Image (cartoon, rainbow, N blue to C red):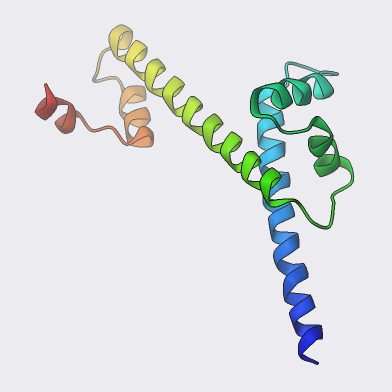
Length: 127
């Protein structure tokens, strides 16, 4: 009886890891694809950039595996984290551009600063 429950718990965690990997792969694909018909091209660019086989992206989209190798799981996680950091840097850059053009008192600047976590008081104390 104990082995049965252990196997069920193992399947649940395997499914969780595969679901996480599929979510990261979907997010990476969405940011990389350039238009209709570019799915495989996006996967190949991601393969070149992050050393993740493009077939893994295909499998996670169309035919999910029961398990995922730890090395591939962590590569996907690192790639997703790197993409999130890149997008945050772009948002901060666009915030600086908006501050310069619209002024620091513009409502859009305040909304983005709240999202990014920047505070005018912290900038004043550093300067």
